[in-house]
Every structure is written in structure tokens, then in C-alpha cells.
Image 1: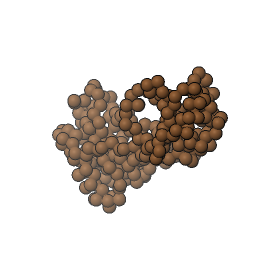
Image 2 (image 1 turned 30 degrees about the vertical axis):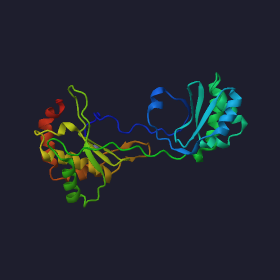
Image 3 (image 1 turned 90 degrees about the horizontal axis):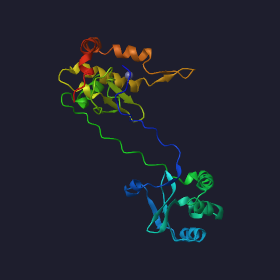
Image 4 (image 1 turned 45 degrees about the horizontal axis):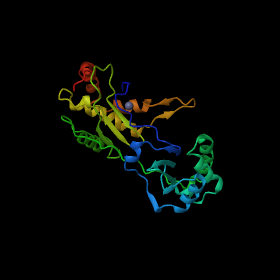
Length: 265
Ligand SMILES: [Zn+2]
């Protein structure tokens, strides 16, 4: 299909490395977090050790956080640390690094903390998968769940396993091109461009777009020896042309593309 994504990216790059240390910003503190506090979340032992190094009052809360291993903030004059529970057994040099991290030489101490985290990374529980955004298959005009279900039964023996929904409407203006649909392999999600949810767009055209996106599950992208990716290989194109509505849908697209390029709000 035409290139130029009008979809807000759904594949924001996953954070692959745990962040070692962050100074929490105010808004992060307010937000309910996904942190699971291990039993006895407060650690008076670590607090006492850090307190004697820093010569000030310290509180320590142990977490099972997957991303932020170390953070601290000041709460009414006291230094409040949140530390991954891997630090419960940290030796003196690491404790010094934690204490030093609140001071001027952040960077050097951060490196020492980083090394410790790397050595104990097997204790980090993988982050819970992000909640998937809700999909809205029922449009004003076309019901994508209905179209998808019928195509899956008729042409794929119900073998396609995906979820489908309308894409979000983007800001107004005239488009130069439009990407009718998109298939996200990782999440098995099909999104159809909301401009197609229009009484002037015939169902058989939406069907062809949905069929196309479903084919992506059957023919995943391939890469040749040079790493060049083929998304719509010859097999894909041949299968696409076998769809009975294909010629008619293509002809409609040629004649009516301008309808889709004009943004309605
Ligand atoms: Zn495609």
C-alpha cells in the first residue's frame, strides 16, 4: 500500500536496558507506579548505613522495580531512597556509591552502581507487558470486526489470529498520500485508517484493505542476504490478487482516492 504513515507510532521502542538511576521528577512521584514493594519495603538497616555515610536522616524503601534501580528525593528534609532489593546485600563500596550518588560526583558513583546492577541483573524481574490500547472495531459506517470475521472464515479457515480496530484520527489538513491499513506483527494488531469509515467508501474496498493486512500474518517480511527487507513479496502479491474483490477495489481506489485524501474532521 502507499507509504507515509498517518498512524501515531504504536511501536515506541521498548526500553531494553534498565535505567540505573534517576532523580524522580515531581510528576513521576505523584503517579501511581507499577512498583511492587517487596514485603518489609522499608529497610531500616540500609537506611542506617546510608545515614551514617551521609550524616543525615535517610529512609530506604526496597522495590522490585524493573526499570529504575535507584532513585532518591528529599521529603521534608529527609533523604528518601528507593532501591531495588538487590541492594539489600550490597557491600560497603556500593553503599558508598549510593551515598555519593546524591552528591556532586554523580557520574562516577553512577558507574559503580551500574556495575553492581549488571552483576545482579538476574534479580530484576521482567517488566509486566504494557496494557494494550483498546481497539475500536465498530465504526460509524463499517464494522471491522464483522468484515474481519467474514474474511477469516471464508478465506483463511479462521486461522488468522489478530485483533482489529480503527486507527486514530490525526490532525486536520490535506493528505498527500494515505496508508489504508497497518499490521503490527508483534502485537498481531490490524489498524485501518479512519478515513475509510465513510459512507462513500464501499464495503468491498474496506474488505480488500483488511484482507491485505491479514495476509501480512501469513507472509511475514523476509530479509535477503544484504538485509534488505521485503514486505510485499511476489507470493504476497499473488495471494492478494486472488482476492475476488481485488480488481474492483483497485479500480475504486484509482477513481476515488481523492475522497480519502481530503480530511474530514
Ligand atoms: Zn501491506
